[in-house]
Amino acid sequence: AQSVTQLGSHVSVSEGALVLLRCNYSSSVPPYLFWYVQYPNQGLQLLLKYTSAATLVKGINGFEAEFKKSETSFHLTKPSAHMSDAAEYFCAVSTPGGRRALTFGSGTRLQVQP
Amino acid sequence: DGGITQSPKYLFRKEGQNVTLSCEQNLNHDAMYWYRQDPGQGLRLIYYSQIVNDFQKGDIAEGYSVSREKKESFPLTVTSAQKNPTAFYLCASNMGGVGEKLFFGSGTQLSVL
Image (cartoon, rainbow over all chains, first blue to last red; front, top):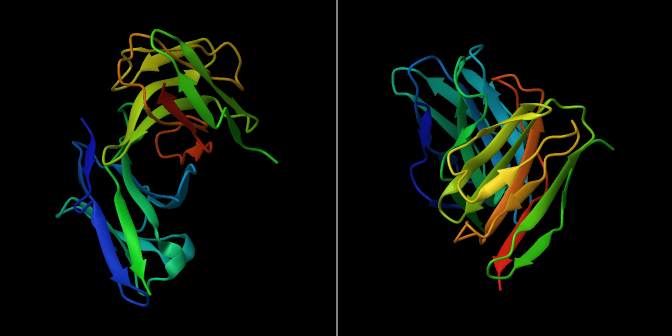
């Protein structure tokens, strides 16, 4: 079975500081991994995805994530936080040969302080 | 513009009542999905459909029903058997491939009167 765990339901950073949101996955086969962002009362938008090509994946709005098989991790980073980055972030996984639907983590709410 | 439309944006349910949430897409996607979002629990899969006239239960299907009579439409009915229906419901779609991104609607907030 596939699953993801997001450590930290709330993360607070200062504007201009590094953003690090953690995601660990569980999968018996090489997974596909995704990060989505949700602004208040809206649906989700894709930030980036890993599908077994380059292990360092660059996404929109300056975000990137690195797939580390040895650590079963796919952490999301951004070098310098902006006020507009305040939102909820979800990690998700799917696996070849498995259920054709994404399994989501519990989410991390990012707060950016001025 | 292509996209996914969910309606209504807000919905209220009385005790013992069934309510239906609408989801329509004009992206020509084969697959459609319903997720339930509760604070602190992320998104949980209710039902999904890979093709017309076929659908599968997700992780929390009890108390819900769906139909897929048309490619564009995937309505979700919250039945009276669902004892805790208050949540934000999200519909999504894609072409059905495992590594494909999901396109989401803007959601329906369901509350119990």
